[in-house]
Length: 163
Image 1 (spheres, rainbow, N blue to C red):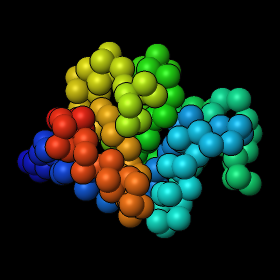
Image 2: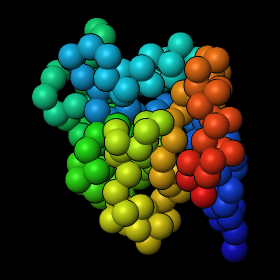
Image 3: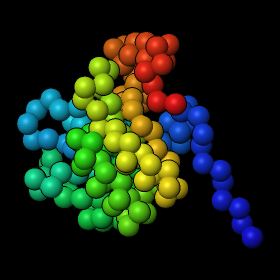
Image 4: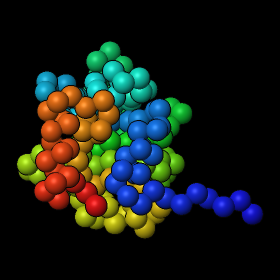
């Protein structure tokens, strides 16, 4: 019988595992300018990832097809960054089971006011074997600029990064 590898347990291991994937959805991209999801989408795309935008209110984003939900993405994705309201995050993680997505990163901004983290969504991921990063931002780990490198340093020292 083949053994399934153990799920990554530390934040650093979960981040490495997430960023080792090549096809990632970003849920919450916006046609309206400087949304955090847009910056994450651009950062991942610039780093060579195949990035798939998700927003039920638009058919395209930056010239690419935009999908209304995770189950509509042709060929699926390896992970999803959720940059939405927490209650939308709950619906999205439920779609992960159907879409076969095993990695979720729920964005939380520096001040925690702009958080996508939902305790119910985190619990759902844990109950369904989905590796979850509940907070922080991929931009702090994926070729970070000086501002995001500083944020990661501060949050690591103040306990602001997810466990």
